[in-house]
Length: 182
Image (cartoon, rainbow, N blue to C red):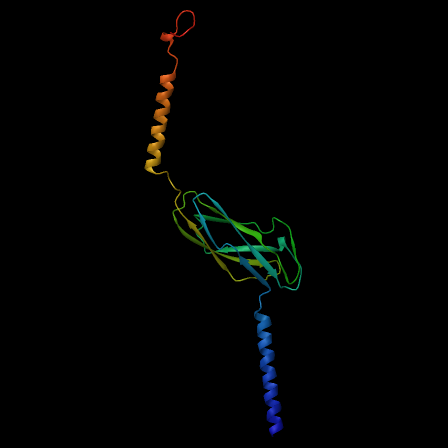
């Protein structure tokens, strides 16, 4: 009876280890990616570029054109996301990392109000492998306008230049008949 309970305990422990390993292998993502610059500062009318890296754990070789991005939960009246990934060709072998590549850009509406805008992005390949969404943020600030003091200074400099130009302008009454100035 002692031997059978030890064998049962051993079998139970092996089963637990096997199920834990199986659940780890199932939950391991075949594609991993990261965005290097997940928060960007911008102004209305700007285009913001996001870069990052991709790790292929799918068991097969993937080309850069095998990837596509899904853009979710964003303000489409102020942000227009565009995929850049795939424009520059590269091959990603199994268990290989792409290094830093341009993933996508976001065009900002020229009339966007100052605010923080969020965008969820997911990476997918042609085999149906999908990553978790990454939240990127774009902080839009107002376009800085020149201060009143700077505008006043510019106006005074302009007036001085105009008045000095007029004072040095040749006056035809000061020229004698022989072409000389008295």
